[in-house]
Length: 220
Image 1 (cartoon, rainbow, N blue to C red):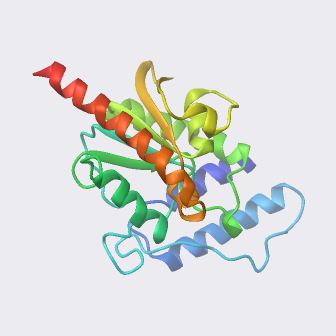
Image 2: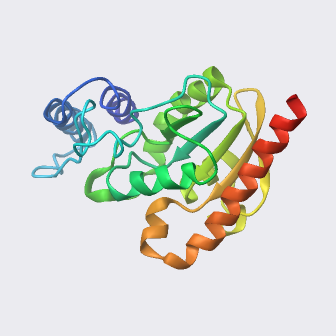
């Protein structure tokens, strides 16, 4: 039941044309039911961080995953749903190598909602959403995957290594019966907190750009 609650929360509260208030009400109900199953009501007074699907932070540019290419060259996978500075920086990162969420990227997350108090996603939340992410990969068949941060990199590569050990090289993501070239790098939020990570992140983006260019040249 607890896993079902997490799964329902992720699927129904993400990109479904709902207002922030509607999402908040459903999230509260699902969390309340989940707490009851686990033996107690422990989330009274918690804050939720949802946005209207049609208008995130008042600008189209800031929407974390509202624009998605239907035939993407690259699937960008983060940890949880982002907005604000994170999303704006991600837009700039993608644009620097000729990518755009509107035309050739599909942006998603291993957990498609923001956990309370901005905490890291828990293993049961990641597991509950794993099937949904795999179905996205299977359906869209991206040419490349860009993982942002430690959690998605570890999940997609089935590794316990930190992102520092996984970045800087091209690896294969074996999922949904496919082997898709994957580049791991730092999450935009990490770059905002530590400017020294910008250089290695740029190196990772250049690696991805080179692989995309090589694939395009080979297809001609």
